[in-house]
Every structure is written in C-alpha cells, then in structure tokens.
Image 1 (cartoon, rainbow, N blue to C red):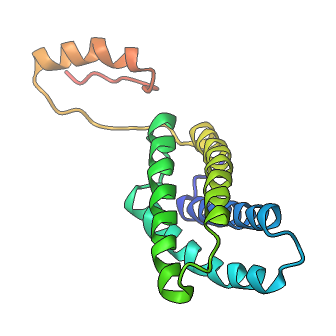
Image 2: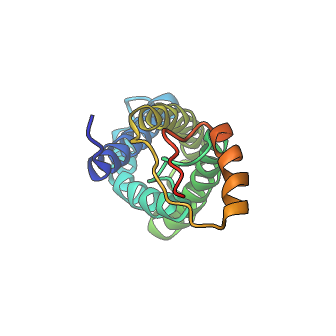
Length: 166
C-alpha cells in the first residue's frame, strides 16, 4: 500500500471534526431535547467556531501527525486540547450571547468529544502503524560506535536490514 500523508491527514481532520459534531449534537439532544429549536440553532451556528478552535488546538498539540507517537501521548494531548477548546468556547460565547450557550451542553460535549476522539485517534493510530512504510536511516559513526550500535539496533525491532560497510 502506498503512503499518502496528505490524504491521511485530511481523513484524520475530517474524522476529528465529525467527532466534535457528533459530540455536540448528542449533548444538545441530551440536555435541550428537540423542542428548543432556537437554542439548538445557536449551538449549530457556534459549531464552526468550535471546529476552528479544534483545528488550532490540535495543531498546537501536534495531533495531526500520529505516526511516531505513543498512544498515551496522543490521549494526554487530546485531553489537554479538548479542555482548552471548551475553555476558549466558554470565553467566546460570553462575548456573543453573555453565557446563553448552556454550560451543561459544553460539559456533556467535552466528555463526549473526549470519548469519540479517543476512539477515532486510536483507530487512526493503529491504521497508520499498520500501513507505515519501514523506517530507513543512515548511521555515520566510528568503528567502535558502529559495533555497539550494531548490537543495539536489532533490539529496537524497527530494523529491516543492516548492512556493514568495511
């Protein structure tokens, strides 16, 4: 399988935005129900702003590139990014509607976002690890260092072939 990093990043971004949309929609339906259409309309109008904030925060915390990261680092960055997204969202809604945006919806949306983003990023991380091309590199060192490195590199499990130059 060929490795297309741009397409994978676009898929990751679209999935992240879909998770945020689903979480916000579920939170609105859980808290507000279907009958309060004026509040639901405001929440849906605010969703693009949440997605823009998400794009900025995920870029800051490096969540658009999951290739060589541990899953624990990804989950920790998601937690910090989601907390920042919803703190910024609370601040922005104060200027738009003076706290008319329901705090309970923000809380539910944050919790649902965490769960959905954990699942989505875990799937994407496993997909990238499975389809990642083999890492190749060159090691420039002296003879003594080469002997030590040659004995340690196969233990890492990332090496396909080792070639010694004399």
